Length: 500
Image 1 (cartoon, rainbow, N blue to C red):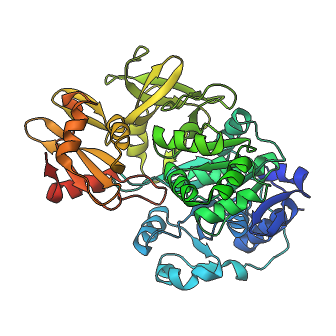
Image 2 (image 1 turned 30 degrees about the vertical axis):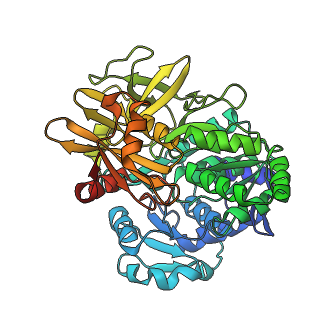
Image 3 (image 1 turned 180 degrees about the horizontal axis):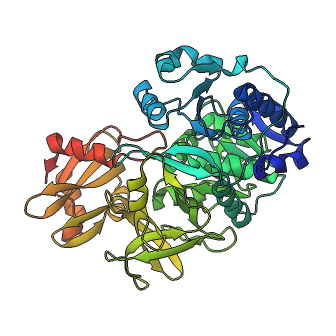
């Protein structure tokens, strides 16, 4: 008889008759997921006893097939390496080469697209993974389970290795803090190669006996239509998605707006993450839905570490307190603890923190202090019992004329200007100042005069926080999760920036 020591999959046995995954009108029970993943595991094993941490890359649209493949790899003793369908072939080639993946599994619609990669790993179609008889291996929780790649906004992506035990710790911290229940249903519109979609929604739902619903692609009206069916009570997204939902809502007739707002007020929880949430977006969504979005803080390397409270005050611009089982401290440049109210680097310890960067022992060593704290590179301040993010040490903290300046703070101010639709602020290398502040602006409407904007900013910010260079774009460069790629902005300023 097939057996497993993986808690996530073992727990599914007690929810066999419940709906685990919904794709449109199609619903799949936990029993379907258990049986399909068992067949996939046996096919991957192909008569062997254990994949013994072979890396298995896979590409499937977000939904039932994705979960079946992921669980099948885990049940066979392999390491799951999810690919992103929005990434170009060279990006996928990098992942396959870096992990040394033994096999590339895909659903039929991706076969021709992935064919150029067949020289790196044999491609196996999900439809060709026929069921076999046999037992599945016991999988120790300390085994490697998954390799996810960092976004690569500040360098080449690194493969972040998490064990089954670390994934469980990431999931259980959230299910406790956010009070997940079997009757919950979350709508997942995020790509499944990142912890936000994999852990915060899919993992938490399946751990809890709840339902994770998927849409084939993100479209604001499709999201609203799914909400109005009345089954969904949780929603989690990145700020860019909330921005697009707000814009679409504002175009709807008043009667439809009222119906949607009434529906949203019945939700249990709404979360924002993966990028800084502009206060203006938080306030606009609260006006529409009656919900103050719960902001939390995490990284590929540790899942979530800090969260605003499920019950209690959520303050705009703050990310809250450490999650259950997670230790957090702020450290200065000499790795000393800093007092409350003083900016410092967020450092984290706990069972949620990753095992290693794949094949990069020196990078792994540098990521931790000698006494075992993971160094996130993010700068925050602790005020009135809650953490507030100032930015990423490398891209969001600008060092100009001896000052350390938060790019996120300047962005917040710029977004309050009526002619600024969106913006991104970066530090531009400068011989005299070290760095000067550059602001890339997406105008709202036909014209945005930089002279008057500069005068307006002088009334909003100290002179040392005022941008010196500007760039006007139709949209900001972003990665697939909606994060602005700050290094791409810096490159644009090299040739196109305008001084004011």
